[in-house]
Image (cartoon, rainbow, N blue to C red):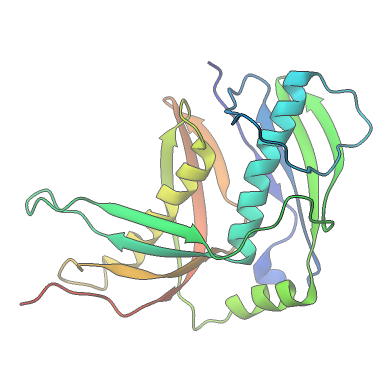
Length: 228
């Protein structure tokens, strides 16, 4: 089983939005990546630029776009999360759950792949997503300083399904911890709220794990504390 290597060179940042109308960047995936396909899946993907693709390359193209759609959705719509900090002494399991608050639909005419090429063992695509006025306003609103900023690293086995998305989830969990640990003397019972990505994550691989670094903004609910 091959190890995935994903590089994202973000060309535009939400922090510089202003009148931003397009998100775009280069995304890559190792041709040795082992993808997971569910029987019967048939998504209306944006067609690649004129380029002959083998069946394996077509599957890699789809797998890469699945992750691109996830990242753009997390940037545009954010996710609702619940985090229960764990503690082995109290036998409390560390648990982080989340759900996207919106998703870019397959077949969205705003999503296009403008270039596809190969370098060494990598497949690269250049993806553009044209924002609607509502989406652009949403990103600009989330950049308000009233929403706290945090960052974190996460990793997940690249021998399992959705390794990249799970690495992002673990990185978001860590960004929650990094924000609240210096602010709460006692371990909270539950932290919840909304989170969105400020920029495209940075990815890498190491020791069999997919690694992601994220920068986030949050809207936190009131913290639930343990009774005294």
